[in-house]
Length: 199
Image 1: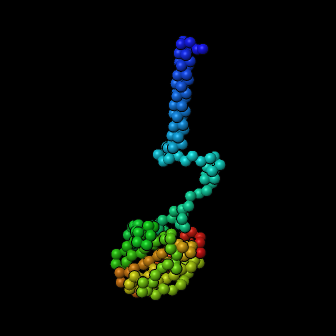
Image 2: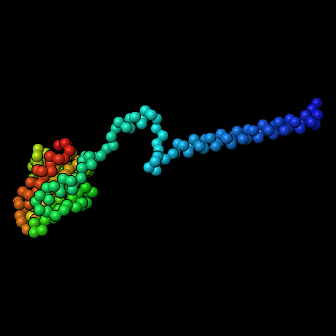
C-alpha cells in the first residue's frame, strides 16, 4: 500500500506531467500560430505574399501577364505625332468608346479621335444613320462609316482581332463626309501599321 508521502509524491509528479503537457500544448500552439502568420507574410510592397511551390513560381515567372490585344499601347501615342504635324493642339485622353481613347482639336478645322477598343470588333460598329462600307487600311480589314455622327463626320474602324478594333474619326467644323473620310483614312493609314498583328 502507498503511504501518504508516496501518494503526495505521485500527485506532484502527475501535476508536473499535466503542467508540462499544458506548457507543451501552449508551445505547439505558439509555433503553429507563427507558421500561420508566416504563410500570410507580406512582400515589401505591402501585398500578400503567395505561398507557392518553387515549381509553380518558376512557371509563373515564365508566363508574361496578359496585356490584352493592344499590349499596353496607348491611343494618344498613336494620334499625337500625326496630329501635331498637321497643326492640331495637344492630344488629350478621352473615354467615349473605351478607356483608351484620344482627341485632338484644330481651330477652324475640327477634331480627330483615335480609340483602341479591347472588347468589340469592327462588326460591332453601328452606322447610326451613316453609310457603312467595307474597306481595308494598310492591309487590315476595316469599315468606313460616313456621316454616322452627322455631316462632315467619318469613322474608320480597323480590325485588330475579331473582338478588338482601333477607330479613327474625323469631324469637320464645316465640310463634307467625303472630305472627312479622306482625312480619317489618311490618319488611319499611319496608325494601322503600328497596331498589333491580328487581322
